[in-house]
Length: 586
Image (cartoon, rainbow, N blue to C red; front, side):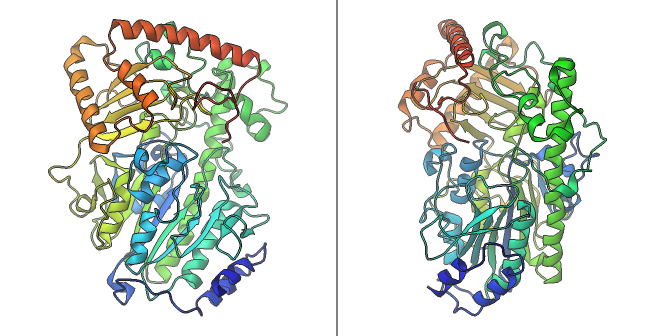
């Protein structure tokens, strides 16, 4: 009860109070844990750092087109002194589902976090429970985004929902009901505050008789990319390098699912940088928010479409990369404390993003896609006691594997509820062991919500990617044309040519479809969760002439529907369930 009262009574504005608050906490009697093994130095601490939407190609260690103009030296340090994963993938590229996969070690059809309504209730927060049982002091600080209280952690201070970049409010444990105990930091930026809270907990809140398991989650660089004011000059006069696919769409890119019949849906599938998508694009969204990123008295009518797209793209990337710079600078503060406190080399440090992000590729914004820039997660691990500096690992790993690996590295048993597998051996040897999975599974369920992404499912191997856009919501409704896409990632890493209908790849298509069916069976996605959607999945699986003719009809019908919606000014309708129109919040 005293712990609750102390948390509740923290003043609303508390930068100078935080240390005193945590100093009081250290006077409280320690909680009793099962399997406590004495001094924490015999076991590693775990620091799991997750940023929101931080794509791998936004980290200079990955050597992308952005590496020279926007280096990330502190994140890169983890790769230089530890391991970098080339093929780490999320199973569903959207915030809540990916976080649930990490926390539970389960795919979304088993942890029930299918979309942004996803939640992981107390009693199911597996990592917190398992580390707590083993005598770890557990903490969750920053962006939570899983609705229910993170009550299985010993300590938490989490953003309310999506959270705000400025003047952020955090929910803490207290004697009031969940969501009612809050602290707010007026005049401060969330990236700075989250780091401050973590540093204060490490200095004053952490019971140093125990190792810690700390999930440190940034809101940045989630849209709309509100960086701290001190970064406004960064990249100010720089022309951001552009992906070729921002401008050029190969005639064989995509499918009827992503282009429509005879390209009729190009304006309506995937939100855009320029004005391509009339429902949602950055040319409309960014100028009112960030006028300094555009010419004075900016009016798109005074410029060409190419000029407008370039304005929007540069504004988008600069704001995104400024948020990333804020993360990297704050990690320098965090790492400095670990060094000064003697914990740097006794701490397994993991850095990742909850998924990737489309940074202009294919003229797309946001994530959700199975395309490479969205599906790929950055993953860097530093632990000098068992991971050699400069290790590069190309094994296919998924976010469901993160939890089992952390438990395994701490010497703990992996619970049977976890579907993921530990890649500890990969880290220690730098090699992929025999019998390791060869496919990464993906399924995006949130059909056409927010960013006009059709529902799809697929697998990625080290060399190829097969995507099946089945194009319907949970109830089999709001259909977009179904279609298949196949990309050779060795010869076409930017996924510009769909090989599905190339007769030279018929055997490969058959084999990958077989692997997709087997992978679905392996992970337990048997269609029973949403039978109406599964009926559509099965209907177009063979994709024969009859299926293709029906896909063309669906394309025409969807175009009519979308044009009527736009004409009526209906730009935020309910697409993920049934056929009824209703708003769906971010």
